[in-house]
Length: 261
Image 1: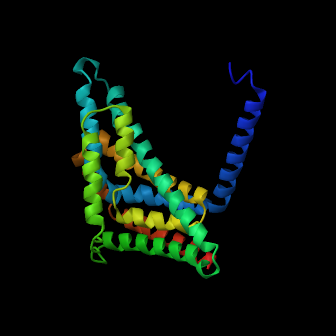
Image 2: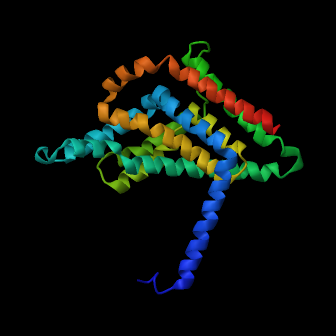
Image 3: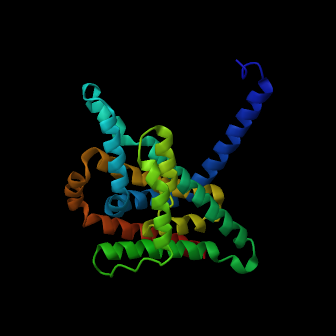
């Protein structure tokens, strides 16, 4: 009723929506290849890597939700809807998008300086190298690189912050848990962050990390639905294919870096 009685507010909202839609459409038309590559990286990487790191958090939440529902009310729909963990995934996507926008804004500011004009292409090349490293590790052609020293205490801090949020349920708790766990250090994420930073555009960087995060959702939902042991059995036939898809993604990012140079 309030909106109906205020035409000026309606016009402002419509203008704001049109501006945002135009901005997003423009970024998608110019960075569509990157977004597709980020989604593929998330999809492939989650099946090969993220399940081991984030799977326990997903399984714990799914188990808690199942236990909170009385047996008389448990149905297949209830089980599936509980395993979706939408607030948790929304929290992760929020963190990813914010970090992607932040690193891209920083790169964009530096790229305005004449001696940093090469930075976006360098970061895209770094992203390609990181994804290539992950693929070669999965193929057994490269020994697993050591974890950066700073990642260990940071991972411990994130885990301690997330621990209280794992106890209990509720949409808000799940969303906050996703926000926190979005900061877990991960080699695959380093590559995604480098690619987002290489856009030098906050909107493009945020969307790049958002599409990467969306790519990780299906595998984690699969873990919550099937359980860890069942998912590992399904994962086995995909193991030879996943590194090859990651190689394709690394090649695409390398081409983007070369075209920007």
